[in-house]
Amino acid sequence: MRVYHFIDQKWGLDDIRKRHLKVSRVHDLNDPFEFEIATADREVRRAFRAVKDWLHESIGILCFSRDWKNPVQWAHYADRHRGLCLGFDIPDERLDSVRYSAMLTEPSDALLRKAGDDRWEHFKQIISTKYIHWQYENEVRVYVDLRGEKPDEEDRHFTDFSDEIALREVIVGHRSTLARDELKDALGDQATSVSLCKARLAFKSYSVVPQLNQSLW
Image (cartoon, rainbow, N blue to C red; front, side, top):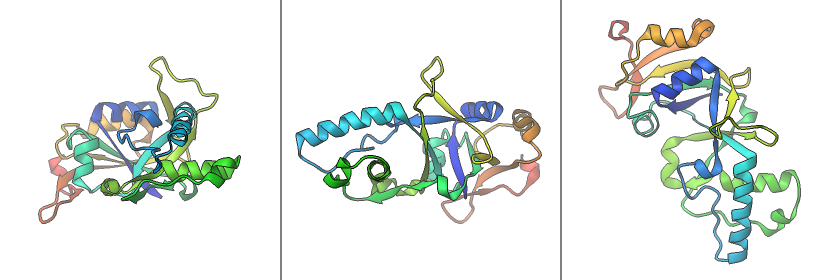
């Protein structure tokens, strides 16, 4: 599936040059309701906070959208349309869809007592459920196992570009001043295999679309 990652220009160019993506961790996500559950039971909440701490140390998340044309995403995640959107081809089986709901997820006691894949799938269902007002993101995720992986000196983890996380296109925000040659320089030997596009605002709808007039970029 072709999926899209919005990012500020500075960090987007850095990722392109270094052929990697920064991995998000649970406590660093911008939604404080990530991995929150519907329960008034203090002991269950305490147990889930401990699991959340474990997930923060053990599991990383790569966040993508199924589309790049929503102007709100450009505003929120790509420096108010001055950033970039990176398009990747990722096998469908590696992607998990985010579910949007008006209600918090109720934990399953039976599944929580199990070990192995069933328990992880239940955790993943909870962490992949977001409040319905986030649905404009149209999000899919890749979960990354961080166990045994050492962070860099700034406590960050990265996942390298690969055949399963393959950069295929770069869309430049309509307010960006990034020149085509500068982007090609960052891509290096990938410049011939990655399509480049400048975005513009649509004339008749609330949408971001490709700028087809090449003389304007």
